[in-house]
Image 1 (tube, rainbow, N blue to C red):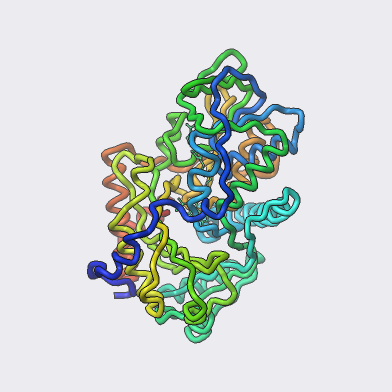
Image 2: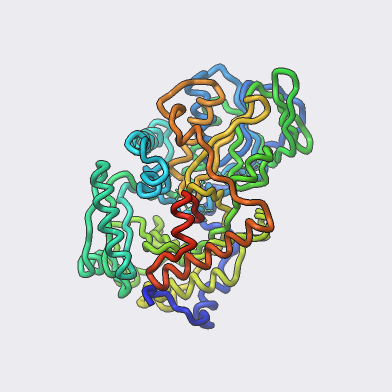
Length: 474
Ligand SMILES: Cc1cc2nc3c(=O)[nH]c(=O)nc-3n(C[C@H](O)[C@H](O)[C@H](O)COP(=O)(O)OP(=O)(O)OC[C@H]3O[C@@H](n4cnc5c(N)ncnc54)[C@H](O)[C@@H]3O)c2cc1C
């Protein structure tokens, strides 16, 4: 056995730790309350209609106004801006556009140097944008620390370190003693601290700051305005909601894992649920007991991995491990809660930090991830090219969504850039098979991934998928 995670059922103490937790994301409660923007209840015309008010849509709106301040830009958001993954995530802001350098190198070997350079530029510009737009997203550029919890992972971290350095990132390998001195867990066998190109943010403050910046730039926002249908109307496209219609010269779709408005998207995206727990604020002796003074984002290095971080008020967010795909790929508020997954997360948390026994979780939530087979954002066009979409970040979109939103707008405006010429932007992922095969393949793959973590060996099925350039991740 190479995995340190318990195989026995979670205990009653593991379950009690999250029993009273609020069933909603923690992050929005760090924002001041605000009234929703009015819903669309009339027929309007605009130059650009953006559907979806998460990071992708909001970055695209800001960029549209930077490019042409006179252009009329409207956002139609089905719930509230940031209601999707953008206020549910861990707040790990990574420079990588390809879900990590290893994945990018395998899938785009001829252009990985350019992609890495564009990713670094996107990360740097994003941090400048936060200053320019006055967005206080609790940006902490402390890097990301990948920990090894099995001997196999120690070797993998060494390879990643070499790769990161080759591509110009600063990375420091830690042996078992150094790692345990940095963050106190009896499970750690080593670590890799990526010191550049990685920061932590408060996800809700980022989304809300972008919303406010977009408003200030003159973007019009409608909330509780779910678009049901898109249709061609001469030179324009009509986006139809319950009570209104927006006629736009161009439409940018930023709807992530939600029900696609363009049928082709369904082939490429499998909505996979990821879950997280947030502890109560730790007291001083609990904080002292874990070390972790440099507040990096942490993640273990298995195929099924946990990600965890400290919040501004010294809670710990602990998420990941199980990625849950359900038949047909439904997305909705009733799926935000999953008792079995929370129990497993709680049990693993106390295995990782036994000194925190007795700590309670105050929040529990889940969110849908727009998983695609290459793990990185892809783009496409519909309705004669007047609609462009960007999605598929597969759980690493906090930073990449700025690139995604801006590149989608460049495509819509027919602006040639270094990015729009890349295979990364022009090529779409290998599609998932339709149901019922889709569920069967995904569940079998998840089963094999769990086995690989237990045994340290990738079996025939995973190696075949690797060779075919196919994957499944959260
Ligand atoms: C639990 C979890 C943890 C994660 N952790 C990280 C992390 O630490 N680091 C990282 O880089 N990434 C992480 N991610 C991924 C990251 O959050 C996403 O990649 C990113 O937020 C995607 O932004 P988006 O704007 O494309 O999508 P979303 O934020 O999901 O926005 C899509 C919006 O479109 C709206 N919408 C959908 N359909 C319609 C319609 N028909 N009409 C109108 N509006 C519509 C939705 O209401 C939603 O607000 C995580 C995701 C989850 C779920």
